[in-house]
Length: 388
Ligand code: ADP
Ligand code: MG
Image 1 (cartoon, rainbow, N blue to C red):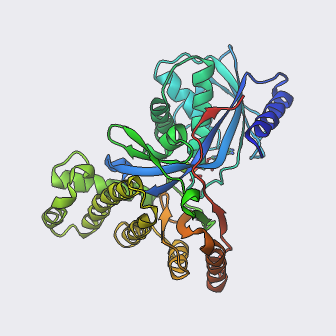
Image 2: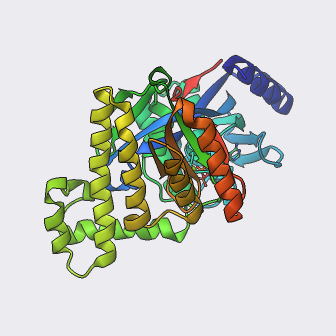
Image 3: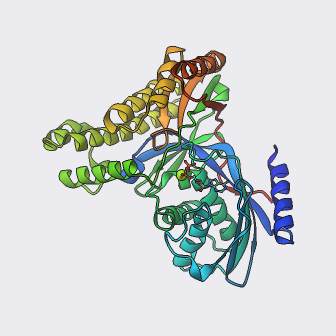
């Protein structure tokens, strides 16, 4: 559906729910991370791009301190909250994401006096494609515009991250929200998560005769679950043992020496090796894309997968099967994307090979007795914006 049609549909539903037309309609996309996994909470590099899948929000201001929330994608009626009652981790449901954004904006000193919000999203949830960030960013951008806050994309992303970390209680890095807020069509976003400096890197697959497939294994990960927290804590331990602020500060050239210093901390050593080599892989991918060698990023992606599987240990049999099958069927490169333990893998392939590859992955899943994966093509799309 065209963006304007989506905007009209969401505005119409808002009007039915709340009895007046919305003041505006906004959209914010989900994302796929091309390379740079589990680096964002180590002050490192990431390179996501935005998906055409997006959350759309119709929003109006209120003046009575009330926040009303509705999502087309869940069974709930309109949920009504009082702004003064918003408190971190008081809400275990989906409304924590948009409510958390309002809470974070008010915490940061911005005057928000209420809102009516109707949301609808085409980003699959729990697939590692950041449906949560899309939801946060679309609400943040709407309130930023309506309340004239004048906050830039990276600043909105920070507030959304705070909403997710503190209000929802999910310890995620800054990549997802920044990607949703700041990506540009036809580009990947090279982001330094330490200072949030960003560069738009041309990533026009179609022009090169290439395709990037997202294979959603439909295995659901639990991001706020313990494994993510354990990896994060392990990375912090590694940084502390090495006497650096963050693993980002371990130079790739000094990796062997750093690993040697970790002594018998075998698990920490694996985590450190992944993070330091992954930062390097992002830099290599950026350099290759800049010099127009798009095909050459394939092996870099595949190396990243091996590192996530063997060193960081966040893959799972379904993700490994996608990668192995795709590579056997002629893919240029493949890797899991997102936090891991399920979710999605990406496959870079020649356009002509897509059909064969998709079939091979489907057959391999059937053969292994896994649920059939959902496969779609990812075209680098626009970041958050106002639609109407
Ligand atoms: P991911 O961001 O990888 O999709 P998360 O677990 O971080 O997975 O976020 C998924 C959660 O975000 C859902 O369980 C739900 O609470 C919320 N969410 C996402 N999209 C919507 C939507 N369209 N309507 C309501 N809640 C949503
Ligand atoms: Mg998420």
